[in-house]
Image 1: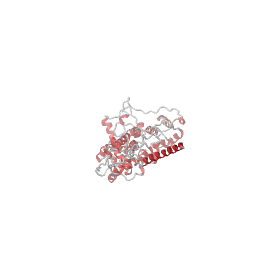
Image 2: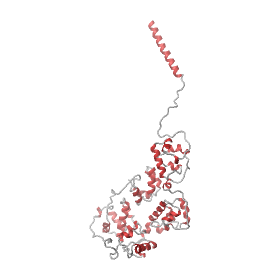
Image 3: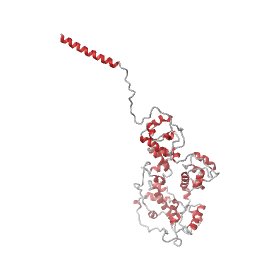
Image 4: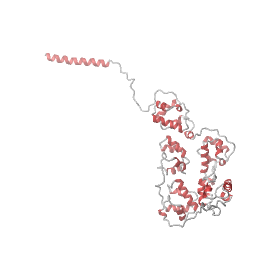
Length: 428
């Protein structure tokens, strides 16, 4: 019996100890875990005060919850848009700032909701006060005239380049307004003074019509009259300038074909168009440098095996094209870096459509050697010189700095579907 009593007492003691321990634990006050925090990457502090993002450096952006690399991107973006953020919407477009981060910061940002567009900032096209002297024809304004009016040096150059793209004339207010350098606000200021028709005349809807009216012919620039130069597509004033350049600057004669290229009223593009038709008379030019454009004797070519991207000027002549058509095709192909579609050849200016159609139906087109890039990788020089990209080049270069998604870049460009389609032929 003693043994059983001891066992019972032992069990009872264990139960009492357990009860005391449980009472001690449940009787304590709730533990204080206030010092424990959970680490979350790039979290924005709960306590925020109003701030101007233009005043923040890398460390201050980090204090707002951004990583060092994100802070660096934001500061780089600030430089790209002109050195300062002008609006909340502009800041929001920086890809280093997520939607969630921006929504939590937005109410503390000391910037207006909207302001100058980021592209305008990139072009350093601050709101300038335009000084319009009165009625004017934009076709007649020089680089300095546009600057005097209030445009920046780069803007003036872009406007003149756009005019050149149109064939040397804006043609109408409608076409002038399409120049991306001219903002809607500035156009409204200029429109009442512009001496141009509202709409592009049906006879000259594009500069193609103007160029198509030019009838090229073989000529000796040393014997060409003012009328001859005008027949070749120059204005009366330009024709007189060329003659004056020949007679006064060159002492009466063009000694080489390249001398004509040096005349400032002859653009590089125009010179390339004229070059196949230039015949310097040995009596009026140095025999050492003269250009006699003799067509070599024809050789038989199998055009069913001749790649349209490597076909030569001589082979085009052999097929039956005249010098004008052959020169236009070779020149256009060179600017493009190669044809990607046979329809491009048929859209070349100054060609015999019927004969070129026969060529296109006969010869193959190999596009494997044509340079192609992504929008992110395309070299700036290539973008600015390619016929399909050069008028959107500056926008592409800017947008890809802060937006890696090419689909979004296309949305920002807001191009007509047909323009976007032909640009994509040259993209990977």
